[in-house]
Image (cartoon, helix red, strand yellow):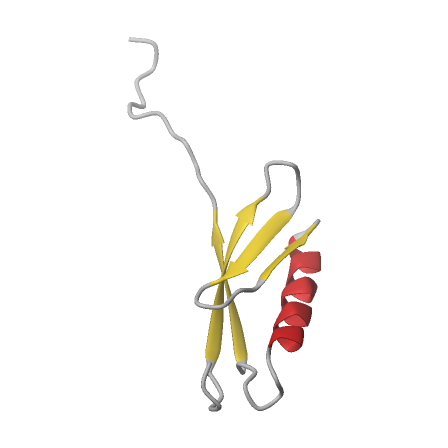
Length: 79
């Protein structure tokens, strides 16, 4: 990363099959996890603070929460 401050860093957040949530930063080697979304937010903030020097730290952290939802292709009622 350059010596200038980045405005924003984006994390992809997914539910962990074993419980809780995992997050990974796009474009940086930052990975963390938390039992709840509230825990995850705290862990992401901590990970960002540890990863960047003060003058490099992004001002904003965006959490992009990704989840899969499976639905039927037809809303047919028993016909």
